[in-house]
Image 1: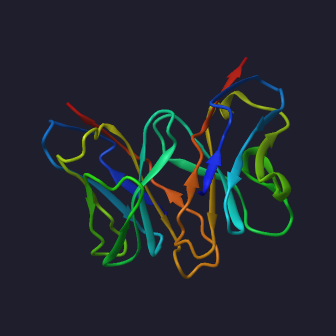
Image 2: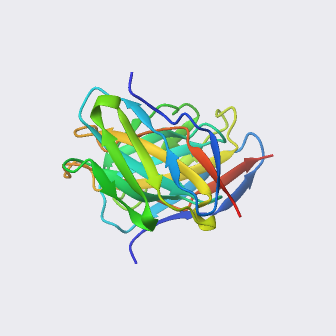
Length: 115
Length: 114
């Protein structure tokens, strides 16, 4: 079955530690996205990548970093510079620039709690 | 500035009653419009989308939405709500040549009374 996997579903870290969230897709999509979700704030875009080895900052990139070394993988690192990292993180993918229009497919999410 | 507004943070309806969730957008380009649904602790599932053509679009689970360009709206409707429809609903807007980026509304949480 094609889809997006995020692991782990729950993640706990101590304050000051970097942590990397995994996102893998087997949909052969070019574009991938990371969102942060907080109660009452909808989804906010952290980073996105339209093609391998390229990515752009979204609206709230500070304190986060990404890489896109493979088409199917787009890991997100939450660094110690992120002031309030506890949140629900969603990864998504879409066909990308080859599509005349695009819809995003979402993974199940990772809930990160920083203690 | 581009934006999406869902005026209702929380709506409660009785099972079997009709439902309308509001979505208004501000977008300079010709928009693509989406409605997603999210169950607690889960990812988002696409309910329906509008790209062009017929302004009344049908989606999964008996939902429909109507694009009204003059009102910059894309309201979601369902004639008879089921208890399993309780979830959070997100409206989103995108445009061609925007790299697939979407702007999401803040969401509307739907509760269903028995």
